[in-house]
Amino acid sequence: MKAVVGLGNPGPEYAGTRHNVGFGVLAELARRQGATQPKLKFEAEVLEVMLGSEKLLLVAPQTYMNNSGRSVRKLIDFYRLPLDDLLVVCDDLNLDTGRLRIRQAGSAGGQKGLGDMIARLGTQEFSRLRIGVGRPPGRMNAADYVLRRFRAEERELIEPALSFAADAVEIWCKEGVETAMNRFNAPARTQERKKGNRQKEGED
Image (tube, rainbow, N blue to C red; front, side, top):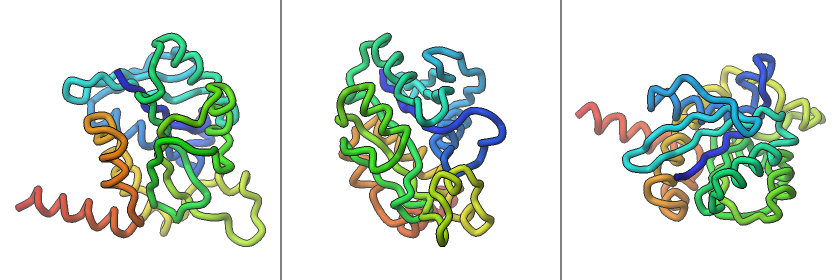
């Protein structure tokens, strides 16, 4: 069994904001599997799906971003889940909008949810998939920026990126983090172009 944790804030007022791209990826994965009824466990909404022969838990902490680690700690302890089988999906201010970056480990890089997870798990050694949301314009506060929704021109980048990120999660689950890194750590335009090529191949 593996678990993918999408970070975000619960509640309709936060739906579609930059901070909630992790929830967006979980929603896309659930849609693909036809899963619609999450259970509330570990202070999170949890869906269990199958990817081939692999059981995958889709976990959306309901603790608000800054306390995400509290939920994940409960999940890890209950299932005695090795951290090699954990992937965290979150937003990243330091990546261009729509760009993906997968890493096997590393610091929080200012992402509060990741920071809380590192503190509560006592290690940085778990995989994470970061989705770029760009930098705040001018002197806008970063905390305000991530709680805002994407502008129309940004949605043209972020919507395919969420689908592409769901592809990356599936590859991570089936083939491992190194394969996912090799395939998906590319600029947003390259990722979009690859996805377009796959769609064309499917039409031929």
